[in-house]
Length: 289
Image (cartoon, rainbow, N blue to C red; front, top):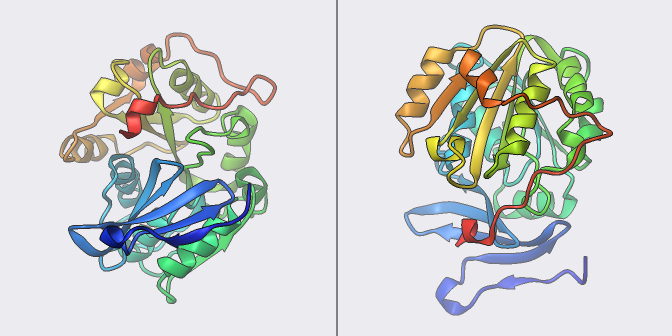
């Protein structure tokens, strides 16, 4: 990147922080309705929302769906061991710490400058057991001990695209290695028509896990618009009924696909390997307007 630049926006928006990070230009924009809440935007693309007064509040649609997975990964309140690949503003790590006290968490975020910005402007609870490592997601995952994690959440975007090396069966082999028996992997995916990337990711997960579910806006699943989908995978049965109920009751209701309907949705897509992997498609400019 070029020279680092930081500063404050114009007087009318004096609290917004604008700073160059490794991945582009980061902005922390105040939430008018929540005094200590900020939205992280990188190069114009909204990434995360954090409310320091209420870390259990999840504003973004896809983060609420990942929150449902976190809630259902273990009995309410029970501590878990979680790995977050991709940190952003550390929203989901804060959520786990707030809803499951005494949880132990590892966050792998490649953008060291972003980590410094977030730690400075949106400090973590000093009592939260959250370790943040600045490293590539796959390299950081390789350092997680075998069978350590109850939950692995993959939410990595570079220039609004998931890097190719995080879309393959080889990547999922390492996710499985890090998961404890019955552990859950949840991935935030983004795609639009004709949904070739999403179908390929479902086929890839099906090649490595016995149980799958996909949570998304029905319009995204019908290929009507570009958007996020959360893919949930495990070797243990998933809490499908409760996940379906929670997704349907969201402010923007989501649909849960699983079993035969999910298999049919893949339309014969093949698993992705390292040799064939490509980054997820870039969203159209209209998505962030």
